[in-house]
Image 1: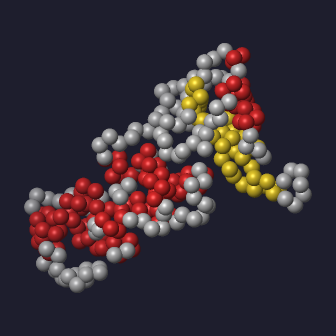
Image 2: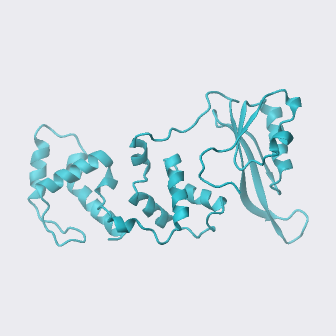
Image 3: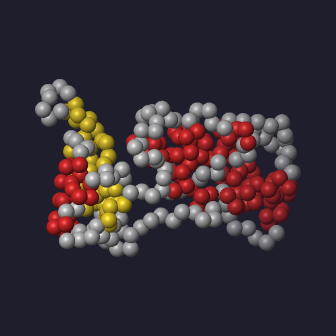
Length: 263
């Protein structure tokens, strides 16, 4: 049974119990409705069954109340969990990204994998990755209910922590070579507590002087943060970006969740 078929079955199951779960019922009304639903015949998707028993309806009802619509999806056999379309290492990275932040969408996970050069742009299909995450129970609702779920980090006050990163954006006309194009890089520093962009600028180079330039401008406008969180930070960046003349004790932190191996 493919994913489309599973969804059709889940929709059918929801349709059976919808009169019960979509409104508040009077005492004893649920039992009467269940018996009435069980008394009819149905064209059950992808099945020769025509009747749905009372116990089965009660199971659907319990599943929906505990896990929502996704809990109504037919179970997948263990051998179906094997994914041939995605390299196992890439799938593990995707699962780790979802565990780290359950709110991450499939598109965001794909973008991170592509930016980290773990997959070629466009090589990973959204439907394929989404299906593999669902098969493993990697949904936002399920992960947030799981014991020991990750809590999203957030600084306690403004200027306690800045986060910096570089984004590859659009190809623009080359400033020096007519008829050619050059990629523009967006350097951004964000205050973690307020989510305010303290510094941001486009450059045609992804070199350390550009990062330093954006950082210095942010310092002049908004003061000195206590900590800076940078992804893929070079080891020599501390001496360049944070000279002793700043008179502040900065920490430049690398991500400690080992999702990607440092190159």
